[in-house]
Image (cartoon, one colour):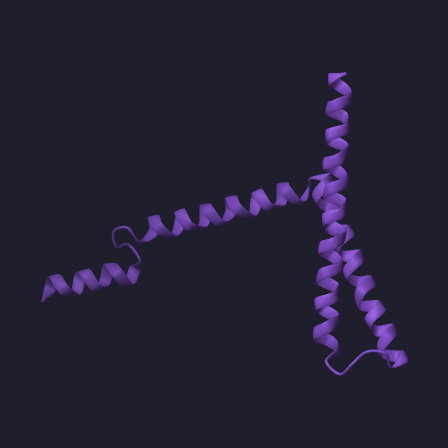
Length: 113
């Protein structure tokens, strides 16, 4: 009986084998992931893409709101507005990425000449 109570006491204190190592490893992985995302968000192209997508989404929602005031929008308004905002953001981000890739191709072709 004495051995069982000491094992339970160790587990209650959190000093059981292996428990602390797993938690610290997971925390390190999460911290590393957050740090990587922060570095990625600091890149000028990424911040530009986020800004373009956000502006396109806001414009699509505003356009939907204007149509709703004029009576042109149908009943399921908010769902369609969000869907249109997502499509507009994706289209704007895609166009910007294609522009950047096109500029890279033109620069590399100019260097080869």
